[in-house]
Length: 419
Image (cartoon, rainbow, N blue to C red; front, side, top):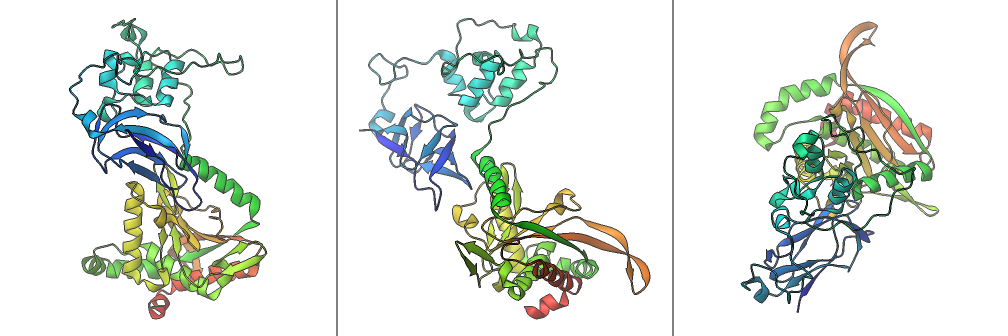
């Protein structure tokens, strides 16, 4: 009896996912515990593992499909099927008909790839796949379509068909009609990309944050001369001792935690008609990845020293960019810090990470002339921004919070004294 591959529990408040990609394909041998299919959720990508050994018999949910907890994704035939000497499909096999020869090399293609191929009038059988196991990707199809027309006709294959037949599509209305693909070698004028579930969620949450919170932003600037000098002085010894660089984030995290203790309404959230003040300090650190922004959380930041903070941030950033974050890494968080300065931003207005009521934005360090004790001097300056929910945070509180952060960063010995 086949074993079902089902959508597992996805974590708190997550009820559906998108089938990202199949890691195994029909006919592949599967060992118990093998990753079979990857699911995209609002926060992280998850691999679904096989609960039994055998052969992947059937894929019931194609890539790009939206699925809910408990739904059947595919079937694994028992182990005896995996050793059955059947190099070619027979009439009695479960599959309705054998696949054409090109499909064995190309493997199944995603719905998006089939759609793009149909729009560009490209025969998938003529496209060389560069994806895993030789699968044809969207980029392969578009690259093929950009080749000169004579090159496309060099190998006519009237009988070949895509590995997986595309479902019939209704004829587009005049307003939806697309121009014929430009096969002259010029770049495509337009490109359509399916939004990932993470990108859709980011879009939805950012709009919700602006609609549901009374969000305002206050700004200040910080003279980072003392922090820069301290980092330069301690840089080599710090890295040799702790195995991690002494960066700006540990200073800003320490200063933020101190300010949150002084102004607890920025370490809170609104639940109904109540304000929940949090006496723990789990600081979210925004990390940019190829799939969008994620905010892993440094737990108990008030209990960590500079090295502990730098090590935690470095590990979370590494796991974020390699796709290894878990839901636990992203859960909760009482306040967020985001650093647009790494991309060259000089000033911006960060958006709240709901249900949090405060977010601190860091920016690029720029040497600027300022007046100190009546004299003009050049100092490394950074603009900082605090966005806050005006429903529970007064403007005066936000200004004093940001000034508290500024004062600690301009005299970092206070951070060391606070421990």
